[in-house]
Image (tube, rainbow, N blue to C red; front, side):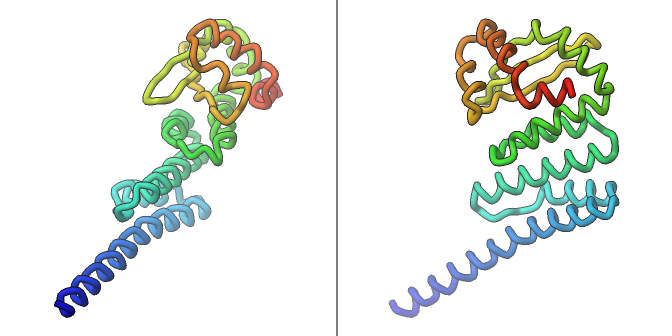
Length: 193
């Protein structure tokens, strides 16, 4: 009986060490992609990110969430460097790590500024804010701002910001209140800057 428990213990240790090693391999790929990004080898970085997207990160859901956020953020930075702003925004909207939410929001707005020009975006936002509406998708609340050029800004409401979190339950009326407060925000000042 003692031999069985020794065997079981060894088997479990091997399993956990093997899983941890596999999980680390995924994060190694992300680090390699970061190095390629830093060297401005963007196509190589994208290739590595695609590989990291399908890598194994063990059995811990937190490891997968962390990897997913790192991958999407690095995709976004890479696409921003390649002037592919819509692709960058597409990856930023999937990044749910709240710790860098302001940085993500800033990158979204900067991508619109770079794509349309600072003055042009400022005028489009001012002309469109009155038509903003609230949207609820995948357990998240968004402000949808249609721009005068046919595009739109899809802006996630941040629950951690007190002034944004009070507008999440009541549709269009609350969206208009959000607009009033948004005009006093740091992001709006950046758009107008």
